[in-house]
Picture 1 (cartoon, rainbow over the protein chains, first blue to last red):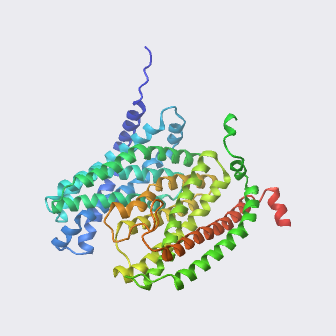
Picture 2: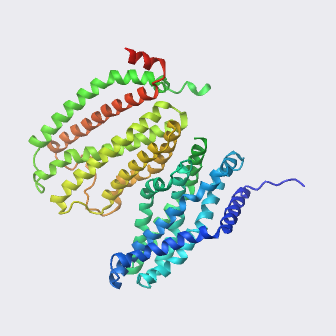
Picture 3: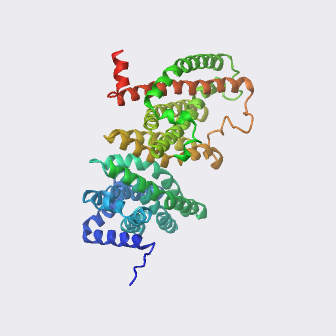
Length: 229
Length: 250
């Protein structure tokens, strides 16, 4: 029987592998979510528990918490693959690096960004976000968190060869996160005040498209540099 | 190599640190004199002779520092990204060094731009800082510079550090058009661009000519600082090569 090569083979293979590996270490999966919940709890306790105040800041707080949770989970994206040599094998393999990287980022998003998005309405209720804002919150996070994963992976790839990548990765990635945060929280604010969401979501979608096309190339280049260095 | 012919010879010569060291040594005095003359002349002209603004009075004069430093902060980023790309593609040592030297200079000029903007904002807008698109994107540029400096100093191997920062600089290049068009895309408090290639400036010639002198002066000053840093970097990295030993032995 002749072996049929499928172009998307490496993509699904890498995706399945990453999901399976994460499934076997379930505690790591829940950590970003717990962090997300805890950061959001700090604001009512630290600033003010007044419902009208909280309703005003809720879009920003939920977005910042989601952003930080994604950022914290970013460092481990390539770390274990780098340490056990899998990353070298991936780079040496004839499979297109673009697809493998995209699959790894997608797996990361499915395990952090997507659960964060689903958990966000709970935080919205805790922070008295008006009901009208919920859809804006979920939709903006749904479009925004994959972009966060893609940009964050660039930082993770650049710092994977370093012993202490943790703080450095935030310095590299946070400037890139700012535009996503601006339009993401603006979309929620817009939804609360009843403005049309289309424009904000279109910009978030545009950033996601740009990230999908360009970021895997940058991630791949950064991985090659980190591994060879 | 068949494709070697269309590349000019100086491009290959640039790849040699020694040639680069010698040529910058020859160019340095010219740029230093030009920078000194232009900056002194521009400052005196701008601060003493240019007419005061009909709305802002004399407080507008900070434009003569603010605009050149902002333009330079962006140009410096672009130079860094282009040099980084050249270093990545042609593996040119000198390009790596140029990119490395750009980051601290660019960060300082970005600080100058933000600080003069804040000083100008206080009498004009009534506050040191507003979260407007132009200011925020400029702040992001400053953060990008800081990230690049941090990444460069975190990686021990010079070659890897140069390649990694080049990738980061190229990714951050996205921010440059955002800064440029932020005043057109959003309704901002910040005024629109002072200089455009396609139109005459909105202010009278007595005002913008000294500004142009200052901008060119800033570029010359940048060239001087850049060359000094580059020469240091070349000497330091090539310290084991014969010509540097001869140079030091005198």
